[in-house]
Image (cartoon, rainbow, N blue to C red; front, side, top):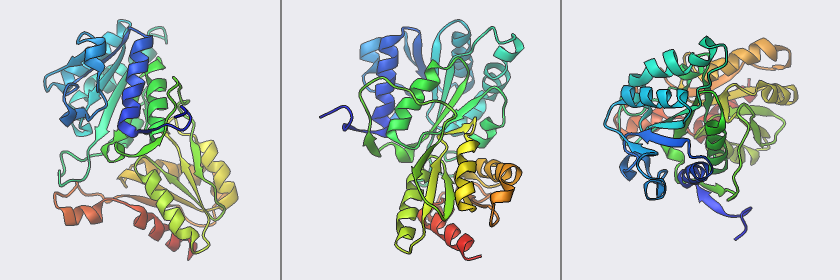
Length: 329
C-alpha cells in the first residue's frame, strides 16, 4: 500500500508522530499518568516504552500539578516535553504551571528562554461520565497570552499538528477528543507537520459558511451532505488551530456566502464560538446577510444520563437545524 493511500486511526496517527519524533530527537519525552495503560491513553503510547525506555516515557502518579511543573522545568532545561492529561478536566489542577509559568517564561526573559512544551489534554465526553469527566476547556486556555491551542479533527491533522506542536519553541495546548480516536483517514508514513494557525476548507459551498471545530467537523460534513439533497450549498471551514485563529480564511468565505454558523463542542457563553462570532462582527460585518448563529453546549454541566446526553451534545442534526433557521430568516 502506498504511503499516500494508507489509512490510520486518529489515535495511531498520534502514536506514529511520537515514534518519529523520539527517533529523530533524543530530547523529546512524554510524561503523564497512565502512559503505560490503554485505559488512560488508548493506544497512543503503544510501543514507546520498549523502544525508548522509561527515562523518556515517564508514568507518573495522579499528580497533575507536579507532573506538569516537572515537564515545564524539563522544557526550560532543554528537553522537548509532552505532558498528557488523559482527562482534560483535571488539567485544572495544573493551571499554575501552565498559565503562570509556561505561558509567561519566554516573555519575562525577553524571548531568550524558549519553553518547548506540549500540554496534551484529552476530552472524554459521553458515556454517562457526568460533569467532572466531560469538560471541554479550550476557551479557557485560548484566553491566555503565550499559549497556542490546536484541536485537530482528522488523523492526518492529529499527526501533523502533534509534530508541529513538539517542534514549536512555545507552549502548545494540544486538545483532542476521544470520540475521534477510532476515525480513520489517509496518513502518510513520512514525517510531516501542519503549520500552526492555518485552517482548511473541508468542503466548498456558496450559501452558508460553517466553522466547525474538533469532533464537530465530521458532524458538519454529515449535515452538509444532508442539506445538499435540498439544494443547500454549505462551505465547511476547520480552523485546526483555535489560537492563533486563521480568521482570514473565514473572512474570505464570508465574502462569498454572507452567512455564518459556528459549531464548537465547548459551552456557549464566552466560548470559541463566541470569539469567532465577535470577530465576524468586527471584521466582516459588511459581508453578513444575517446574524451569526452558534451551535455549542448549553450553559449547564454535562449530565450523567444517556437520554440527557443525546440532548446535551451537539450533533449534525443541530447544525442542520441552525442552517435551515438561518437561511429561512
